[in-house]
Amino acid sequence: MVSLSRYLLRRHLEAFALGFGLIVFILEIDVMLQLLDQLLSKGIGPGVAVELFLRNLAWIVALAVPMAVLISVLMVFGRLAADNEILAWKAAGVSFGHLLAPVLLAALVLTLAMVWFNDRVLPDSNHRTRELTTSLQRRKAALVLKEKEGVFIRDLGPYSLRIGRVDGESNRLHDITLVDAGKSGPPTTLRAESGSLEIFGGGGYVRLTLEDGEIHRVDSADPSRGTRGRFRRQVVHIRDRDRELSPFRSPYRSDREMDVAAMLAAADAARLDNARARAGIDSTALAFLAMAREDTAEVTRLRDLAQKTAASIGRQWRLHDSRQRRADAYLVEVHKKFSIPFACVVFVLVGAPLGALVRARGATVSAAMSLLFFYAYWIFLIGGERLADRGFVSPGAAMWAPNLFFGVLGLLLVRAHVLDRPLLGLRERLRRPTGVS
Image (cartoon, rainbow, N blue to C red; front, side, top):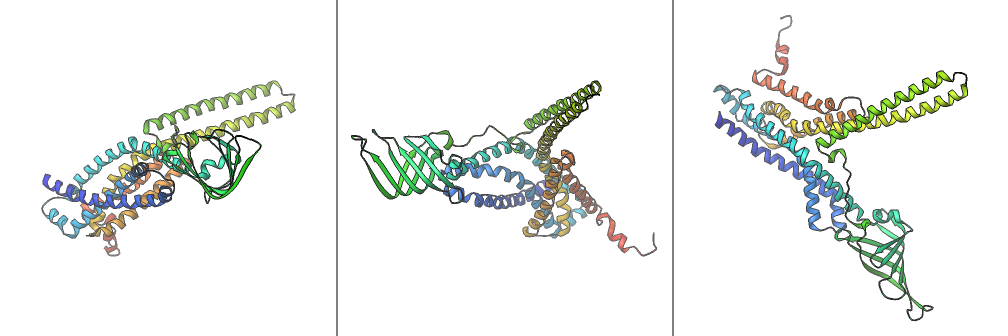
């Protein structure tokens, strides 16, 4: 049995590596195509590009591992069934359950490893990816300067820059004024109808291209005299240490950038705030009732007080509901960190008997079937997440419902294969003669 388990695990490891590499390649290519424009146009260095590639790899691994498990199980058991190996082992007294046991154990170990990965590695990678993406977006002049249209930006080295209008679509600047005070004497002023801005070196180096402009210089010996010239194109190099053009760093973390302990603490804090809010609502209502009993004769005052009390309670309830939704969102992510890795076990239960039933030798059929199953699983999961975020179902039930559904389906398929009977015995019922009980 030990040699048989090693044989099965070796076959699964080969198929898993093939499926995992294929899925990672497809998803990473999709990510790189989305980021290609940013990588080519923002002037970032190769180190940042590699880091962005690796950081995006984290969430891809979290999705690719369960999918690769399903592909490998479908491929291996399909090939074993096609080669009649399963039938031969059954004849030798090795049941289908014994063939499935080492694969289930390996899937459980992989589940534990992915739980650790989702809790310790994935949040930091998601956080750093958002920082890098935001930093890349800030390199675009439309995002860096849009909020400063018509205002002089000072402390750009010896320069002061004013942009009249920024075109966010074409990344073009219009009505540009640049004041150069880097030399002794009166500053030099450059004005241009249009231009462009490129940022390099993590925001420390700015290249400003001016087009169709004028240059104004004041004579340092006689300030009453000056010169004016025109140019078609002028490039200005600016060394900038200002924060607004520096790499982005964010202390804030969303629920997908937090580990389990941080999210549980945040959910507990939200629930504690809601308990205090409910106590405040009760005290507000009791205070109004007490005042109403004392001032029964002053109808106008009671009406105004009732309106103010109702508005106050309404605001508190809206805050209560908002905090509850936030707590539910945290709990959804907590359960997701466990439920998605556990899909490795569920997919073994589904894929092994299904692969043996299909008896497919190649990887094409296995990959197609696994994508179909994973798509259904993911739609199930996303639908449950939205219902949980809106408070219709509990976070735990929403995130574990897909595993429960497909797990039960897998157990039924395994049972049918172990007993060598069709699922739920439908074929026997259809073959049974009419009137025979």
